[in-house]
Amino acid sequence: MGIVTLKRIQEYSELHSDSDMPLRKMNIMIKNENQYNAACERIEELLKVVGNDTPADDKNFIELDLLSDLVADYEEIVYPVKETVSENLPTFTLWQKSSL
Image (tube, rainbow, N blue to C red):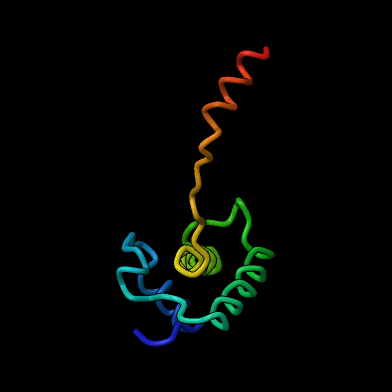
């Protein structure tokens, strides 16, 4: 697929509303920061109209769900969370227990 546009997301959501195939496997991804920002802005708009009582087959709910997955995938790649474990953690935990 090419560049992700909101129109493509809406078309995809209408065609595949019952599909569980991950967007990444279908090569539907946010390609750059501009698309990321546009997707985040659209998510903010959708959050104003989609609530807990919105049916899962509602077009706004589907679009929000798909855009959220795209943004999450982009953030995992571009802004990865680095896991670090402190070497002092076990010592601190033992010290905490002994001071109780």
